[in-house]
Length: 223
Image 1 (cartoon, rainbow, N blue to C red):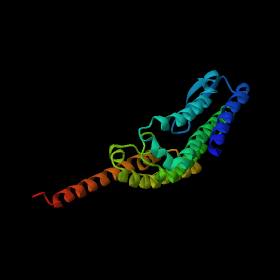
Image 2 (cartoon, rainbow, N blue to C red):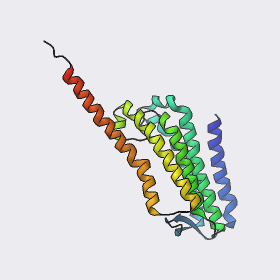
Image 3 (cartoon, rainbow, N blue to C red):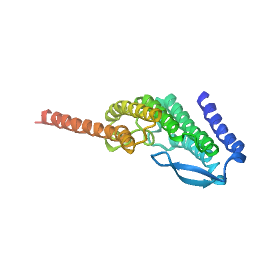
């Protein structure tokens, strides 16, 4: 109940912020920054101001729909508190981005990238904290062939992946605080967060396959 109210409050904050800030926004609002912190895309404020509230609402609807259509929908009961917390984390991050974008539009000299990386790092760190508790499903988590076909592989990979996400989050926070916006750093963050769990999952798959083969070879044949 508390999480549901929190999510609705975030939607309300997003919509209210869009309406109240509209008269103060320039005709063209920055919507994308390159890795060096330079704006490389603008949108008319008529579209830009309501983009993020629309995205937040769509995400909130998806969070409600996805568990109902997931073939493993019964699994959600096993990690319901984490599922609800992750919803709030995702919605909160996009509302945070909306506030940064609006403030940057009104104050062009504002350092958007630093706070964006810090916010993203905090989000990844929080996701990493909850990731080990996520049970097998088709919409949330590290969804690769070896985790989806083996529950033990899923659980081990998500425990390892949790540490990878938290490490990536710390790297992004440090990057934002030190204002080091190098593509190489972002690349390594993504490598740690996305590639290492895949390699780890596959290594478990190879080991499990060999163990299962050995068991079959040791199993006595029927006479």
